[in-house]
Length: 546
Image 1 (cartoon, helix red, strand yellow):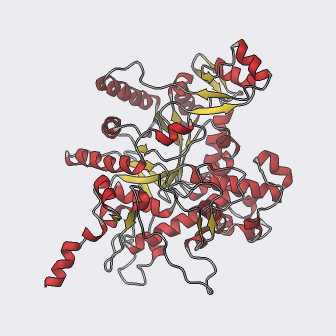
Image 2 (cartoon, one colour):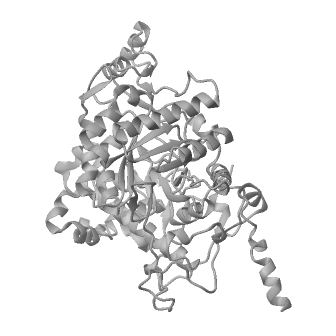
Image 3 (cartoon, one colour):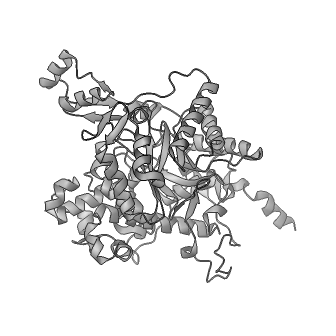
């Protein structure tokens, strides 16, 4: 197994735990006091793009040896001349060809386009308690940044206050809160997407949403995710809640209705219960039946009134990947999110996360191959998002390039949750009366935060950018977790603009697979992206022989 470094002295970041390929710790904690790259970027923003302590240091790259196949074994190509994709009002003069003029906004969809300011979206934030606790920060932050955010599966099913009778929802306060929080600051960029699994379908989630919110919501069908091969899981720590979930029709492990389990819980031998969702398509036995069932489900959503529909699929094998690309294209879906193994989740069986499925870069490389086959036949391939262990601006660039021209967005899960945790912890210290409501964990500011200041406007680099957007009077209603997300978004945007400018691409749709190359032969074999010194070698030799 490749061991990623725990610290980066150049930018002053340190991981609390063992870092994954994304740069995040394998176990990311809501109470963490820092300071991985994403954590620190949520405070300092684009400052983290540069080495620290300017004026008394020089800095050199340590990332020159690439081992194994991963996104970190792709490198980004730069060009000496040219500029493509500048806005019409700009010229190819050097005064205009500067990185702040790179346009990182875009859109996806078929008939009704969904616009975004930055080509990222959240992973599915569903029935886990972490998603519920920090939702206000996540949703307000996504709306202000202008990116899509996904309400994951089972939100209605686990809500004790929801009223469901015979598959008809009459009350769903938690789902309403999720949607309304985003829409409050939605300004035409980004989207609220709601996932639907087997239980959600039975509970009538699609019918409830369309009746209450119309086409303001994108409905997403769920085919799994990169972290797990079975349905979603959460843990509950009371017998009463476990029994409630059992009565709602969920699988609860161990079974809270068994006398021996009740006794074990009473005496402390069992301290929690795992709630699981169901597998889909279990009553189907061949591809034709799956295809027919899927198309029927899409048509059913359209008849309800949904104008935008998406599909989320996980790191299954090549057959399922081809099905997702083909069926989503045929059904004219607005977005297909493909989540490779290596991403994170709320509570999946650990060894399943470690050993199941197709790693992200392998899955994404084959996605491009399969999409190209459909495109060669003249089909308009579905717009796509790539997911699975992606967190930094270079990941965004590489994944967009690897999937070009089909990939429009990069789906980020845990990395976009970190600013929500961090901002809530800081706000809980600055306003102790809000600490419990915010799920804040700190009694005092972490040392890395104290170095920056003692008030929100001193701590967050994007504080006044947010104030300019919402107005000084509205700032009291903006959670600091949302400001932290805006600060992280600013860093990702600036970093992506810089990488694109170096590649002479000033608009997202100008990015191609020619903007990356493989750092080792194994990565070349898997991705079909040529090896570093093979790229432009023929052109170079023509120059020498001319």
